Amino acid sequence: MPANGIRANETTVPLLPCFSAEETLAFYKSLGFAVTYEQRRPYLYLAFTLSGFDLHFGKAPAGIDPSTEDAGGCLVMVDDVAAYHAAFTAAMRAAHGKVLAKGLPRITRYRPGASRFTLMDPNGNSIVFIRRDEPMELEYGGDKDLPPLRRALDNARIYREFKNDDKAAFRVVTSALRRHGEESPAADRAVAYATLIELAVALGEHERVEPLRSDLEGVAAQLDEGERRLVADELHLADDLETWIAGTAQD
Image (tube, rainbow, N blue to C red; front, side):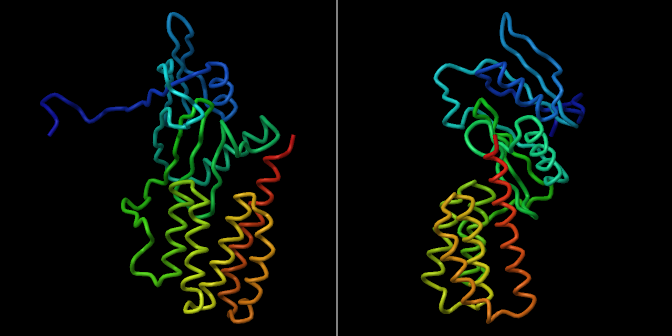
């Protein structure tokens, strides 16, 4: 219980480490943040605001390496995650001619229906945008009520969208197909192949894509119209990702 006299009118503002004032200012201003405070001496302090939230920065402590990407972080709870991702990627294209998808700074990709994405700033801080109604509980290892291959696909979703680990997602689905593919419905196998295609594109392992498409074609004849649409939607995401990645490579 709050102590007597405390009113429920608090505001929490994250204070994150900053290694370069110039890079930090340039990055956040390019995304549309307004600078509300800027000081270099006698100590570094920067403050930014966007919409209804603020980010503040101070001098990074000694011994922190931004390349390890664990300098600091915060969660931003929003109603519409997709809108923020679209706004940031558009701002990056306007400022840099491409989406920053690798190294620092960068933004992680967003799949329709996902509940979060991460913005990594030049200091190695992670700003995670999360849909306000995202489920509180996640079953790492996949939903145990699902059959094996679907459970692996659910587990891959967790790796991909919550841990930013496409390699682990690829391994999980590949292993499940090898162990449970023959006993699984054709629709589940088709979705698994389509998922692997999207992950292969994300990982830059383009040599895997054609063999996976061949495997998918071998299953396609067994699908009904609704199942084909489901697979087509997944493949469309892979095509969109190809376009997105191509855009990140432009000068």
